[in-house]
Image 1 (cartoon, rainbow, N blue to C red):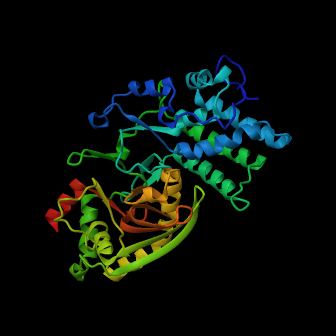
Image 2 (cartoon, helix red, strand yellow):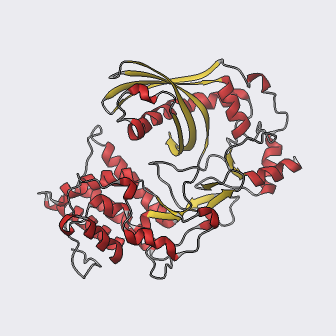
Image 3 (spheres, rainbow, N blue to C red):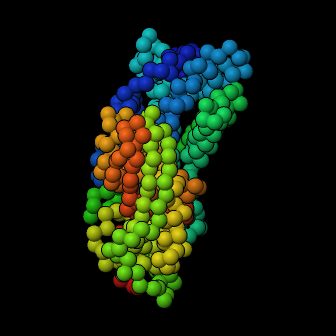
Length: 420
């Protein structure tokens, strides 16, 4: 068994995975205190810790860890115990000890240990505008010599592989999950890779790894911070060329600005906390028009001073309103399925389904059929029965949130506008 850094003893057995700590008070003291080791930008205030793999998904791993640790199957037990011991060592002495002390009788809670792994969190600003919820939230860096393109850093790349392996296992056997020895061995391998990459970063005995300031953008107008993520950020000169080329012979789309004519619709169904929900998601032509003037190179409205986000991202291949409509038709089913997953996560336990009425979902970094997307959806009607609600919703906007389209800051767009 791997030796723990805590008092030179082996990792103690995990407590029951059924004991889920308060998510609002998740961080142990060494992690919270660790923020003070770094001088942070003023706009970050006291800073915040952002999980690369969300607490929800880490908890799903924690729920299976204790049963596997206690399994009768020797291979399963051995693989799970090796993974747990690695987690214990990766936590480091101060964090591991704090997690153990927080548990009854010194028995560390697996949820709290996974949540508090220093390599699992990234130090950044409070309340970023594009918080991805339970979606993967990587640290990224520019690709040297690339046209503004970005990539995950080595730690995030390995943790993404870990999360993907876990999600595939959880979805196996018709959603019942397959949590065998091979899975825990795979998780061990990816965590070890992440740990080796993290240890190449100099943190001078600090608990937390240094903040990566380059990946954050601050907008003084809206007082918002955003993480760049996987979005490519071309230079102003490159951006000017992109906008100029895309706007040659651009057709007028003004006629669609206030049109309530239906442009696209999708109906999806799923169990949401025991309710059999039917969701119909629609987009009127005015919604598609909004996507055009906010998120396409061809139709972007440089004169609109009300843009709420510090960064705008763009669908580069939308050159006509028909292109935008076709893209909407393609995206709506996946966005609808995502909405139901978010209902399950955020609002599934409300007393009545009618409480969903007028709720707005703003989701970032959502994988929609292989594309990372930001979307904004509002629920406009909840009918049917409480056991089988029939929900209507409108897609108000959607944009690329990954490598599918370029991003520009408000300042860069202002500079480009002066030269167009």
